[in-house]
Image (cartoon, rainbow over all chains, first blue to last red; front, side, top):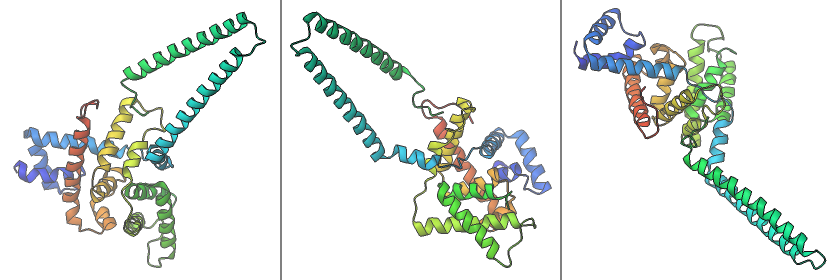
Length: 144
Length: 164
């Protein structure tokens, strides 16, 4: 038997669904033909992997679809943006309100500014490090 | 009955790509099996293949009736997220194989699942899918060749692991 006749029988051979005679012919051919042997090996590995696949029997499939749809991603981005803008406005108003208060001594205002400036610098440093780590993380798109 | 329902639920999900719809289909299949007078009884020879054929028919009917799109790709997105015990490489390979299966036509995906996941014989597959027994081997072989092609294409994309 040549490759043209053996190739369609490889799946049947793999699944033990051939007659004894066909099975013997395929086996003999596989021993001498590298390309058919490679095909048999590939199909056998795929068969084993498919047999061992996990199929999520929960709502994770729908959950993933919901999380990835355009509306959800847009809503999430809008939510974060609104929160960040709101926080900035609140901080700016508080700082303005405190610094413009006439009854607070100047030295206290200086301490207040220095303390919060220090906090802001630390926050920006941590944020910068996180962003750099994220940018260089080659596994960031890998879902575990 | 309890022994075959998890597998039948898998089959319904492999066809529809939706867990909730697969549950509905399974429930309808159980009702049909109880109503059908000439159906094999649980435990009898051929009951499992008969029940899977009912699930197959109901799932295909559901796809046609609802004109649903194939949502198997969602499974490929969500798979392996739930099992932290899996190694990174195994999780990636499973995801790639799910993506390759998702890229196949429904008929090819189903025949591969019936053989390689559910381990039915060719005669049983012919019975479940209502096709000629003589065509199972050739259809399955073509499906496996298509799966190999898709899988290798995905494996060869940048960042993927090498080899089958």
